Every structure is written in C-alpha cells, then in structure tokens.
Amino acid sequence: MSGKYSKILLFWSLLFIVSVFIAIIGWNRLELALDGRPPEPEDTQISLNIILGVVSAITSAGGFIVTTYFALREDKRDKSMHDLQIEKLKREIEEKDLELERLRKQEPPP
Image 1 (cartoon, rainbow, N blue to C red):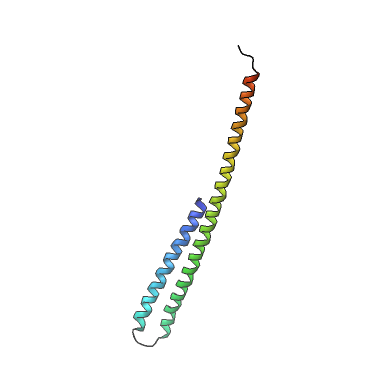
Image 2: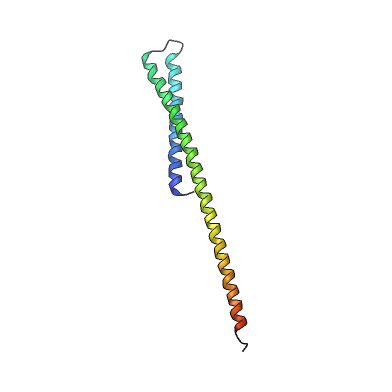
C-alpha cells in the first residue's frame, strides 16, 4: 500500500477511535447525570456530544472502508501493470535468444 493511503487510513482510524471514545464518555456522563431524575438543559449538551460522536464514528468508519477499497484497487492495478512488464521483458529475452541462435547458425565454423 502506498504511503499516501497509509496516512489517510491512519487518519480515519484515529478519528474513529476518538469518536467512539467521545460517544462512550458522553453516554456514561449522561447516565450519571440523569441517575433517575428528569433531563435538564445541560443534559441536552451531553446528548449532542453523543450524537456528534456517533455520527463522526460512522463517517470515519465509512471513510476508512472507502479508502481501503481504493488502496486495494490501486495495488491490484499496480500488480497487473508489473505482471505485464514482466511478460514483456520475458518476450524480449526470448527474442534476443532467438536472434543469438540465428547469428550463431550464420557464423561459419572456425
């Protein structure tokens, strides 16, 4: 995998981990804040943090999946290009070998 995709994948992974962490912390804070009483306006802020954490976790997971797909696709394309180059070089070597054989046959024996 190229360095370009490695950096992007690292970014998406870290964003996902931070987002999940924020959502879990927010959920725990909301449970502790409510503790059997009706919600207050400050609890809305905690709920918003949970929602934002979950949304960003979903977004970062999607970004990670899409980036992985494109990285694998590029790797597959590079592999097929290298395979074609190897085939081309093999053919060139075969042609050179045939040419050498032809030249040896044309030379008169000493």
